[in-house]
Length: 161
Image (tube, rainbow, N blue to C red):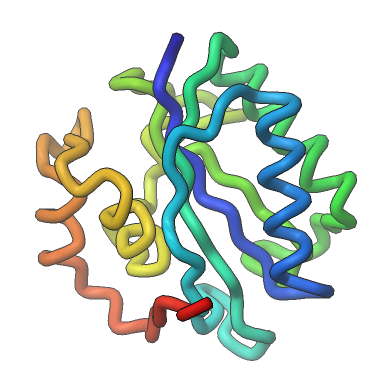
């Protein structure tokens, strides 16, 4: 079994319900969710003039290879109404593969670890909640260290439920 970290997020439709549905689909299609972070509300990154996102990170155990996970997460996104019309545009659901054990992949289809982890506060805060000591296999720093040195000033607020 491999350990995989994913980031879920969306800013269209019923955001909470979309996250709940995505988590259910992930358990059916990918593996077992071992940990999940709180939900964080985040201003849009990239294209800023759009609704706020809800994001959370999950740790999963799976037997699937990275490209199989990518295929299944994209199918889940599509089931939840994702339309790929504009880079960094508004969406009902986005599921990014952040880490797959300590594998490093750089292909046209997939980059693991995700290449923008260290630049995105909305990734680092929820990931730090569930895996502060996880070491980035390229940067050789923990998630907590990356969070403390991140220059992103985008507001990322933990939601109290």
